[in-house]
Length: 112
Length: 113
Image (tube, rainbow over all chains, first blue to last red; front, side):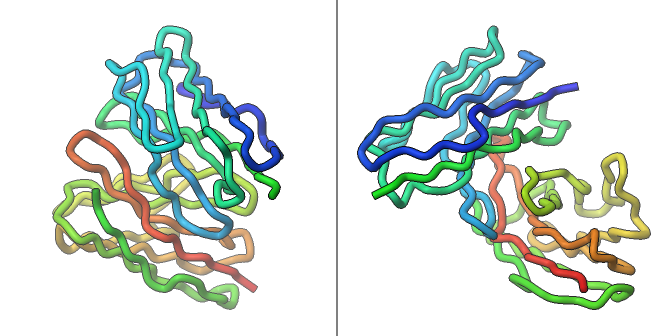
């Protein structure tokens, strides 16, 4: 059974700092991995999707990497801003016929 | 990408009543998913809704409590029946694109008193 763990559970950083969020998963036979952002009481916004054959994806100040063999992914946020404050969720898809498995998220606070 | 809307955005309901949540997508999709997010928790899949067939429920969720309709390829409803305070959660619908990237609606925040 796939399990997804995110570390740390919460993180507080000063504005401008670069930071890394970690995600690990127990079953390396994944189809893809997706990073989401969730603001309090809101839905999820898809940030980056990494297919199993890819090593990384970039969008603006965000870079996500995938090391499938070791069961790890990282989300790198450059030059953090207060608007980046949110919960970041990692989710893994094992196949097209299985549901996404979510981690519990990292709650990020960027202090101005 | 897909644009998803949900109604209502939030509601406060009395225990023992039922609430139907609507999910509308701006394009035709094969699979739609319903998730629950309890306070302070991550997302849990309730069921997968396929057009023209019965929804597939995950362990711990039953059709009598969470009936789902999927009348066409752009619309679905989830009903939370005979509600109790434990049903207070955010309910989210999502869809998957051709490469299985998932997109989520804005959620319905339900409070049961």
